[in-house]
Length: 268
Image (cartoon, rainbow, N blue to C red):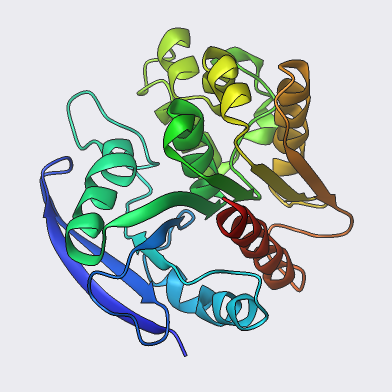
């Protein structure tokens, strides 16, 4: 059985302590050199999401589809969070992309590779992180990522930005509606800006979304798929018929995303 540990650390990037959970392989020993998987949770959630995912990681690991690895999830806020660096506030993207992995390397490393996985808001977070600096990562898997069918504040239909998605939509421009800031925080914008690096890295990318997503995230996922195809960026796109944002298919899809990361980590 894998062991899960809850801890916290003082994070300069956000000006306070950050709670997190770490999932360790059986009989883990300090100094064992393993890959790191950063697992980002969705909106209105916390590092407790790793507790729910633990049986899925264990199942794929026991089947031989996932290597010995350190898996870690930090608790991040939704409002004034969203895995975004705020100009006059906390830098949540810097936390998950830099400071958190550095803390883990010092306490649980050194690591041989780093992969990213996230769902919903976490899917947005892992894609924007991977596309910002693709050379650092071995693979990225996004399940029902919070991405939109448009690349500017004005081009996203109102139907696609209800409730918390509208908050994310505004947060991407730091509440200013500035198109340059929006594009800078956009998964599509980062894919376009760093397309050459993503292609040369041959970064394994999974985008998975239910075709019946209640928040219409399948429309954003399909738009991203089209952008990646336009940019000739190799990726795996799964549109799961009948599946919603949550529901009976959610565990199976998360399990498949874990297996996708596992294959990339085993093959590296």
